[in-house]
Length: 126
Image (cartoon, rainbow, N blue to C red):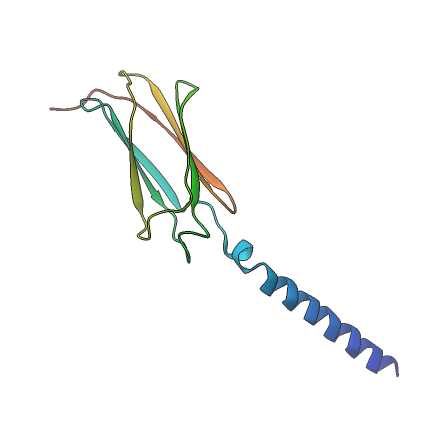
């Protein structure tokens, strides 16, 4: 009799675990950006941000926010409703900056996590 109760209890726990797993599959598969790189072209005053964030659905699991700070002040704070299908992908932003300015870039996943990097604007080699 005790063995039957234990088997029922184990079966119920397994069912509850499976129900939880299949109820939240996107949350289980969510992840922050794999990589985040950036370069600044002082001649064109453009920041090119490259984000590697593979997704099973670019409209359900995507980079939803990119924030750029220049010398600790927010200069760009954009939200997105999807991301390009191909990863890595890049975004380009026009930001006036001078040699020595520090640009901090943060890319956030709409489901889980973010990645932040900093670069210092340098003189370009000719």
